[in-house]
Structures are given as C-alpha cells and as structure tokens.
Image (cartoon, rainbow, N blue to C red; front, top):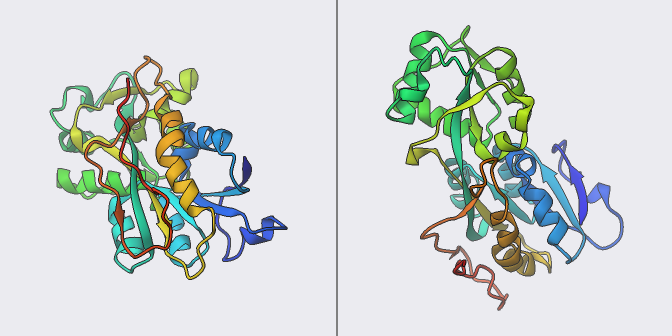
Length: 282
C-alpha cells in the first residue's frame, strides 16, 4: 500500500509527501490507474512504502529521466525509446502486460467505423464524415497511439471536428459521449465505466490496436534498495493479479506480452531475478 500523487508539479514533489525512510517512487499512467491495474498492484505489494505518481506517459518518462522516479510503468514505446532508453536512463526493461485499444463512438455510428477493415480505415472514415473525434491531446500513451493511427490513415486531424480534451482517459470518454463523438479508448478503462457511457465499442479487430505496458527500473546513481524486489515481484505475483482482471464479457482485460524479452541496459550489482520470464498459466 502507499500514497498517490495525481500529477507532477515539480522535482522533489514525491519526497515532500513522505517523511522517514525514502519511499519507493513508482510512476505510472492514468490508464493503469483507471483500468484497475494499479489498485491490484497496490493491494498486493507488501514491501517498503510505495508512493505512486500518476500522469500521462510523456510526463512520467520525463520525471524518470530527471531522477524523480525509481520505477515506471508506461505504454508509449516511441516516447520510452526517446526519453528513457536512448539517453541511457533505463537500467532494466521488463515487458509487463498488454491490453487493447478500441475505437468507441455513438451506437448510430455515422462514420460506419464498425465495418472498417483496419484501424487506419476507421480513422479515415471518421475524418471523411467530420467526426467529431475527441483526443486526449496530452502526450499520453493513448495520445501517441492515436497520432500514429492518424498518420497511418494519411489524415492530419484539424478543428472543428477534432477536439483535444487535455484530460485523462475517463474524462475524455465522457466528453466524447457528450458530443456524440468518437474516441480511442483502452478497453479495460472503458469496461470499468460500465453503463455510464452511451458510446459503444465499434472497432477493435486490428493488431495495431495492441496496447503494451512496460516496466522500467530507472538508472540512478543511488538505486533504491527495493527496486530489484519490486521489479521481480511485479513480473510475477503483481502481473498475475493484473491478468485476473476481466472485461464486461468475461474475457481477460490484460494478457501476457508474447515473446517479450527482458533487457538489462547496464551492469547491475543486484543478483535477484529482476525480470523472470512469463510463467505458464493454467
């Protein structure tokens, strides 16, 4: 168990929120929180005090690069490469779990997204009919994926049909619902909203809509003593807890990342099996 901070205001904000021995500082995203995955991790973790910082992936990765976080869980591979791996701030990379994105929108589906043959085609249809489409617009993993889909569709989205919420996943979905518009959603978060939305899942049948979450141990001059045990635990018992989460139809909300190979980016004194390979599930 631990404390949560829902935004990063300045360097040192985590340390200011806890007295005594330094807490383990975990940075993660709104979709990890709003999907229920974070609550699972926090409820199962019995190690040193955990302080969790919640923000869009881009903000979390920048905080990690600045040395303000010990471990991060994000879902924006291009930003992870540019902000953490490339500059040498990642000590260990552990493929954790994956969920799926989906295009959601009004049941009437004026853009005929539901009959598209690919996610890119679904986005082209939305642009062709003038949306509306509500974007996160916040450098989150969801926003990064959305921009990649617009690029694949050959579309540069523009107002007035393209709106940016600048908010988290839940707020963005509610705004899209109010506008009777479309949005990109991670399925676990959408499922947890239950009957509060009129929007329906219209398109999800494309492998490009895979949503991979990765755990990184941040390379710092003085590693927190609990980083090794947390990474090892998260890839075993913690992940098992996340994999037990279900969507509304009973199917798994998250799956193990097939073929994900752990990678250590720098020598480590730690001898613990930080990132064990996925265990077979019965």
